[in-house]
Image 1 (spheres, each protein chain N blue to C red):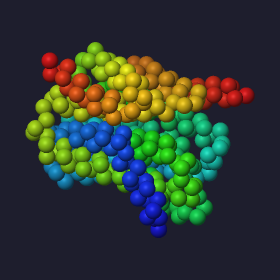
Image 2 (tube, chains in turn purple, orange):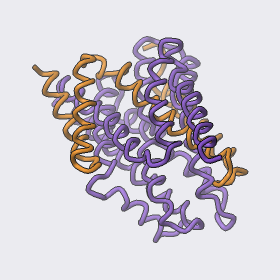
Image 3 (cartoon, rainbow over the protein chains, first blue to last red):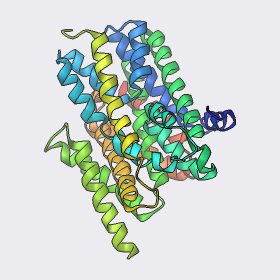
Image 4 (tube, each protein chain N blue to C red):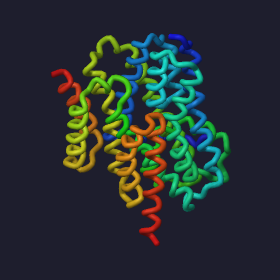
Length: 234
Length: 106
């Protein structure tokens, strides 16, 4: 079962003064309000966040519904946008794999892979023994997921009090917070180059293919950064 | 809307879970000291950075209505505040929301 001590240690890691929960909550307030304005009822709005728990994917779904896209189009658009979760999972789970832990914990907790939880885990995993990292991760994921759901509920109920300017303010919080976190995490040559190249190549590739721009920017930027890092070591 | 909201949510969750689950499965044989892990780490950081810059430069949703110049100013001042306050995450985040709301209002 889940080790309560490490679970709550992870859960409490979002209760710091510079917690990502603030930015995450703000963004999901905006999502809750947006989905209500699109005609989602309370249950649909809440279940959307509970089951998806990925901001860009929810935005793409909302936009696709607005333009009357088919289910296949929605699936493909969301899959492309959220394909970034694949390298995020591959670069996180090996840090938590331990032979004493059951597989179901890894399969269950992959739902918590999202930028905020991923960045918190990446900055804290070294403080936790490898055997208990998965319980710590489930704690972090449960906490950030709960904040997302609560933010969505608040957004749904307060949407009529939020004007366009306030919604814009809430929407910019997430990219700014993540940008600062990425700049803060740039401590090695490889990571610094990955961040810089990703920031530059994402918008450049947008002119070639809007759907693939994030993945192409990540693939090319990350690979070049990795190769330069390896050359620098050798 | 031509598509039922229920099915749209279902399809969105499946598409999102697929990447997460495939990531969890394929990471089973990867050691944290391997070159493959390091490469994926770089890919993850670069992909996130690409997503952030695309969100700011080519946004979807309500941010589309903010001008390029206002978004550029928000990024610039938020990063300045981030470095002035010794890499504190809260001040630039709170500032960005207030600043963009205010300049968009006027």
